[in-house]
Length: 98
Length: 98
Image 1 (cartoon, rainbow over the protein chains, first blue to last red):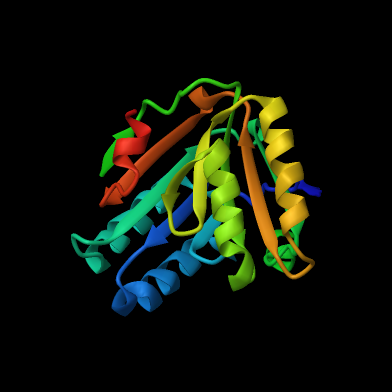
Image 2 (image 1 turned 60 degrees about the vertical axis):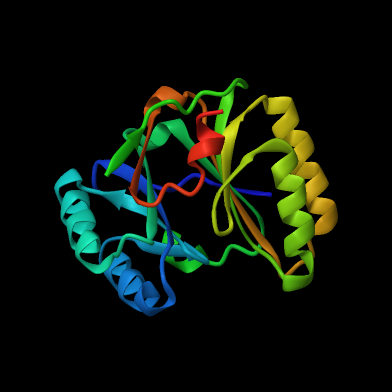
């Protein structure tokens, strides 16, 4: 198990966003999230971001989504309170250590 | 957007676990995670858990996984530092409010 300590990449809040959206909108949602955060695995994005940018990102996502879709936003104000471990492949290794 | 404040369900650490594993092992991984945490969405589980139980859960998961699989564990020591919001459907609503 690897512990990923270097989560900080600028910005003032760390977010993990997971999505479960209709097939037709997966591409659009992915593209939008990639503008603001790092893809980690399957339907999960993460990253440190400024609060204003997060608000902008969520507002843009809302324009893409329909009622059947679902987006979860986990927000951790201080990334020192977060520990991330990986078992097995770290799919987003290159992105985290940029 | 709905803010889910009542994250506490006992235990002393809040975890979000996401997985990306070979098709043959998805069922087993899901079943194992369900023993300890709540399913939220797609390949994401979450919940408050005792540290000892988390260690046991991860150790049991390792026995199921192969080298190509990937499991991410986000650990937040104090759930007061975490805020969860949902846009759209809250798929795990009944589980969170048990």
